[in-house]
Length: 308
Length: 257
Image (cartoon, helix red, strand yellow):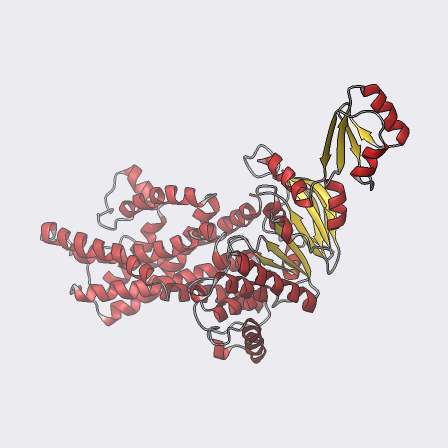
């Protein structure tokens, strides 16, 4: 569905690339998460994929349409939830929805709700019912809660049946309960519409339900795969051992067939063994034993920490 | 068809936003009213008895044209700030053409300028500035032309400014000199050559002169510099130039950030 190849973006007057040669693919119907710390290049990537920014080099296609040469076709195929709210405060919920529908050519323009096509009004009524705002749909957006606005934006972005729905840190600035209900709403949307979802976030926990995750940092892909694969890739489980007789320990570890890396103290990869069984197999008297079994979160924080 | 619909939707949105934003309506009247009420009245009472035109009326016609022209121009330039805010983000990622966005925005900002024109005209009546129905009938189409022309000026400025910061810092410098070069408050009929050249390349001059022509053509006084046809011809030429070059640069700069 999405194919990104060696994408590079350097902003004017910038000395480094905001996006530095990333490549990945997203399959149809997938829940894909682009994960990375602030400033990693997530929003830049989304802007390029949604055609509001030209790449410096490299390219991408969405559902077979090239993001540079067939920008208009791409725009028709994608829906976007921006980092910043994209509803007009002074317009009513319905007006916000109406202008979207007209811009995407779904219904012709009419100056009032009553004059809009019957199909449009049916759609708005359905939408209002789903969101439980039947009574407030004609009230200005500024009277809505932050969570409700986000939900309305998601519903609005699905009006033109996009093949891919991009969400750029949709939960930024929302409190925990709101974030949770928004999440449930999004899972519901996925179940019913089957739309490919492309989400960016810097919260690891939001990536855990993804089909696949791509972690980027400083514009480069750090890790890519299913959450389990990412875990295996990023999380290094090992036990650190040392002895006063280092050469004896090195020989013994080699004889036992343990994978070690670097010099002393030795990192013995667990490779599915328990720390206990490894330690028990070593005869050489040990002077140092340290275990290292981080969670995925620890591993991710290491990446984030490095960039700060 | 859908592009035309989209243009109307963009224009309609601008208009609703104005109607629901009371602070903006009030502030949009503040400057013209100060210029006309304070500056125009005091010029007339101080210098106005030398046999020339009534200075209150002179300032009123100038400020009216300027306000409408500047309102649309500024509305278009606000696209720089808007593109990362509220619904405008949606407009920029929607499948409609960039040209439709510009056209819709000019139409919308022109609609926004019209209630301002109505407010200033009402103020003129309060100040007992003579205003006949015939003058009104001539001024309304002239002001529509001025509004659309201001939009084109906005496009060429927009295309050459990279950021909102630049817009806020530079815009006063390209606007304020034009107040004087276009002769809002001062006569520009006998300028020294360098100023005359600057005056003649100031787009605002033609917007103001067209407005004045519509007012004074029935009074017998000769305050306007060119006749309507000359002003219109120059404005059409500038309009085409601004739109073609401006839209081209804007669309290009939009994606090559």
